[in-house]
Image 1 (tube, helix red, strand yellow):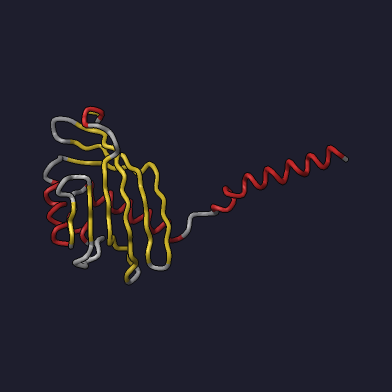
Image 2 (cartoon, helix red, strand yellow):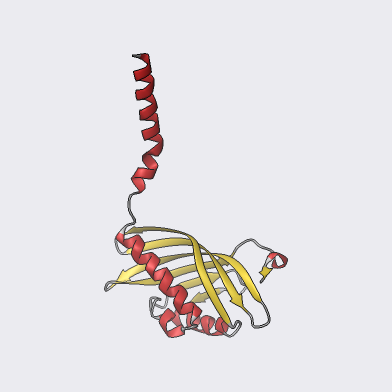
Length: 164
């Protein structure tokens, strides 16, 4: 009898410990859509396709993108577009993979945080550049649009950036 109680108690404890895993459930439709958005963004970025990227950004004058550069605040589509055009002139090619992505949503608003690794070809050398990206998306007429973005390279010092 004592063995059965211990076995029962052990089973309950195991189920309680596993509850967070069971509670996660399958990927939601919004999570899938946001991850698809991020993949499409990465492909457009790799192609240096400014028009496709701008089609993924809300056309509102209050849209804000920030990054770690000292002049890294861009407000409105025109400033954001100019920043992409300038950035694309600084490298030959780039390939990005997401290592981790977190997505949450409420109604027609979703927010994400991603850790990524980009391989950037500068022409004379290739660099592995880890970064973090967070943003807010709004669904308009069935399409997710970026309304806020914050991008930063990870805490690596310049001498820690690994040439390939």
